[in-house]
Length: 87
Image (cartoon, rainbow, N blue to C red; front, side, top):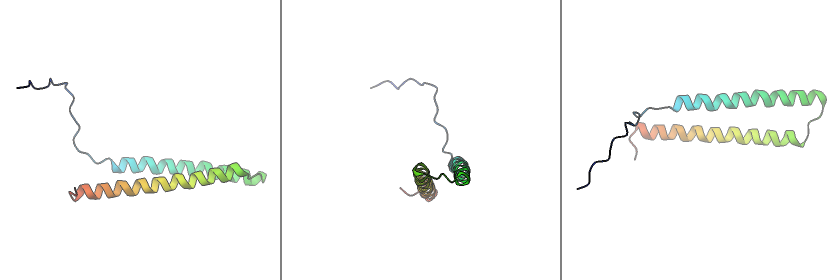
C-alpha cells in the first residue's frame, strides 16, 4: 500500500465567480483603446493625413472589440452552464 503524499500546505481556493472582475478589466481596456484611437484619428484628420497605417489600426481595433465580445459571450455562457449544473 502506497503512503499518502506529503502535504505541501497549498490549498485550492474555493469556487468563486470572477466574471464581473474580468469583464470590468476587459471593457476598461476597450474603452481606453477607443479613446486613444479616437484621439489619433481626430489629430490625423486635423492635419488631413490619414493613411494606410490608420486603416490598419482601425481594422485591428474592430478585431480587438470583436474578440472581447466573443470572450464576454463565452464567459456568460460558461457562467450560465455553471449555475445550471450543466455537464
